[in-house]
Length: 510
Image 1: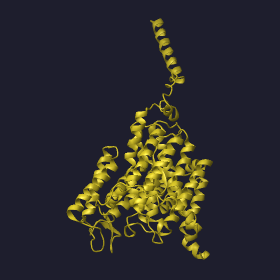
Image 2: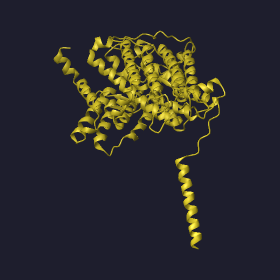
Image 3: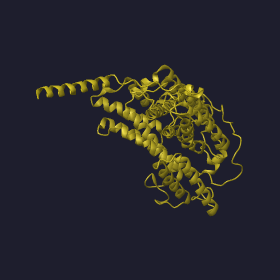
Image 4: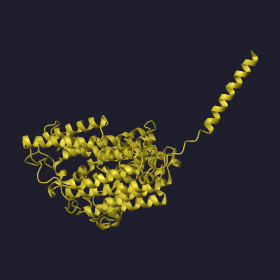
């Protein structure tokens, strides 16, 4: 009996040793099949476990998921007349058709370049946070060409950060909770803009600063169209329908056009407060035309510094850099993980190249007056379809270039429909709130202040500044000063100067 027991123990020990050895030295993975074509070899399609069909399908899905920006960006930055476009400090405005053309051009070129150089299935297009920031805040201080010059400077700095490795150092200096809070705050800011543009939330003459609809109720047809669009897009996204936002924009625009044809609501104004806020959804003229690229090169690199002073212009650039910086870093990290190409430390192949090209997207976006271009989280849809390489990005980019010929369609989409898409995108960005540990008040307060200050002050810069200053002060006062990175203190001092720039300018006689 003892002999049998010893034998059983020896067998068990041998199995355990064999299992441990196997875990320590796993069976080598067989070499992947050799590439079958030039495309396969160049993009490492087989090596990454993908196929040509998956890459093409993923690229098409990513385009249809992102294509709403070709319609939405012109509605945010431009208009179809001086009366319905965001006007700059000098009264200048951007024609929506031209904005649509350069939106497709820049997204197409940069997505193709990103695919060829970074070899990752990420699409690039005009960032919704920055274009809203430009249209709502920046152009009240500078002209559109000067604003786009600031975007170009922002892109040049991001490229330099990528080349020198400073981008990684700065990223590590900011606590992850504040990074998440910035994204959440921008999402809330974008949603608030959508609510206001649709008439769902309105200013009041007395009492509370804002109210629901007119006199606390929804009483206009355009706002009802906004609600319908919001629900349609929300349902499509919730059901994970590929291209849900684009489908929702098209469907709600058709609904708006039918409503206008039957009810003849007309454009809004003092004489018609229940009308459409900007575009009236009426089909007129040709819908397909050669792209008007008249905005290419229409930027003033240093004009804003002369107009509003070096300090104010520098802080605007700082805001643009931070918005671009953290949005792109978080997005690329998440997409790399979902595509299976990320390493254990969160980095991914051709990391430096990806950072540099993303910065080039900001440069080109400003140079074409289409706003800074950045990586889109919507690319996850294409990755879900199997995209693993830059070939998918090339396919997406080619489709974006084709979209330039359909920019007249933007004149049909009312702002109420675009506003619904803004609210949905804002809700998507809010998902980052799960990264914030609200049980630690030293973290919860700065994060909360960052999130709420952006929409309440209608400023991304104010939200970032309040969050950084409060984080540094609360951490120092609670005995955690050593945990605040030196770069955070430098940024905090910069924001203190920014918030006091009015009195400082008065003292300096600026």
